Image (cartoon, rainbow, N blue to C red; front, side, top):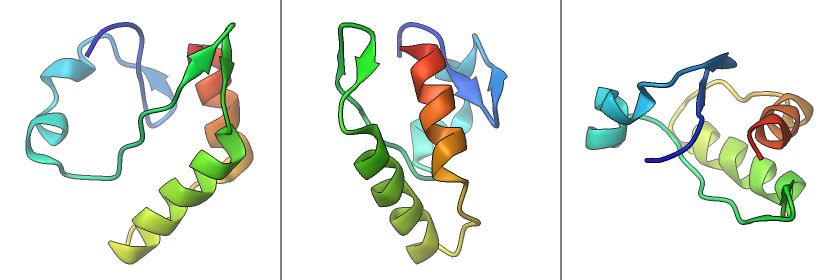
Length: 73
């Protein structure tokens, strides 16, 4: 993983070393960033929360996810 990352809303520069990324503990999405904008961010947030629900995880407000993705972009 390269570039900045957030973990539970907090900047996590060592996230690439996190066990969850190596073993798939959680829900992840890869988003296209074009001209510093996350493409289809609201649809991506809906899919992420749907995936989380299937795993019995608590959903996160789509607006919060979109805000954080925008900050990283």
